[in-house]
Image (cartoon, rainbow, N blue to C red; front, side, top):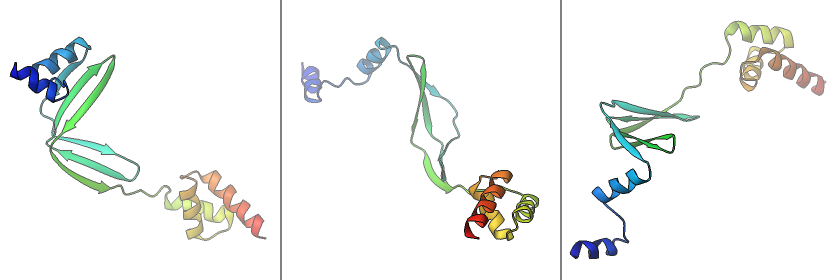
Length: 129
């Protein structure tokens, strides 16, 4: 009786064995991924590294869901590599008739696309003259 009263007080939220039974009825399969050393999540501007995590895989309706718990967490900023080589920068600079710095900026804005950078620089030069 006391157990039922406790369950009612918790809002009827099942725990332990009852929770496992409910998950099985819903078609969920939970398994722990043994030996996980680290989990790395990469975003647009940083990397989140979780060392020594507890990782579980949940299979539900054809989808795989990963749950990451615990572990030490650290963040690292992502260093954006140069999008163009020095040769590319020189080529853009010569073709568009601009400085090396302007060519680098244009290549970065064009995400390394040489033709797009040259066209944009020439368009800007024509607009200012």
